[in-house]
Length: 171
View 1: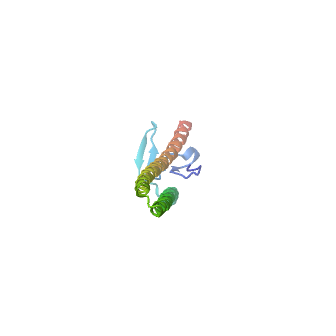
View 2: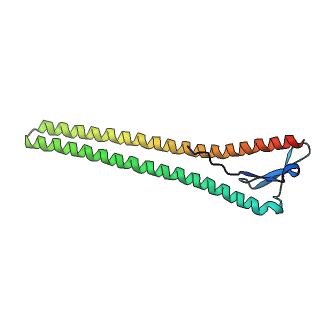
View 3: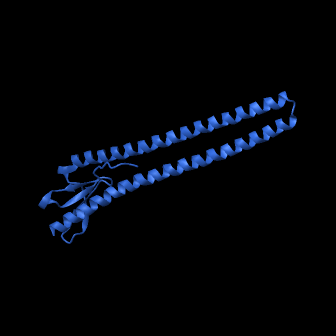
């Protein structure tokens, strides 16, 4: 649902034979590989600091864009559900009014009471349907936020796998 857009979440320190670590853009931390393969946190090297900040900005922009899409979809779903709810309530009222008018015209008090009872029941059922739809919308919203978080984690995992491969090649 989020699509296949990619954005860097980490940035290499060095290239090829000079590859010696990476910057975690989300955490804004640099890590250098030590001889035994362990990672050591260090300050971000000055020679790549400007590029790192640009990549951090790109990552934040991509995350904000995806979050904005989720928020817009959520608001639209809420508005559509409310419109449909109000439309159904108007239909219930129109049907009730027709039945009430017929009952009054025919002086049938029992039919009027029955119409009122059915109106109340229809409104209750519609309100329950609307509340269930809202619960589903909220669940979908939470699921999309989880997917966004997973996307960010998947990006991190993919880059970590790449770094592990690079480290193995250096050994």
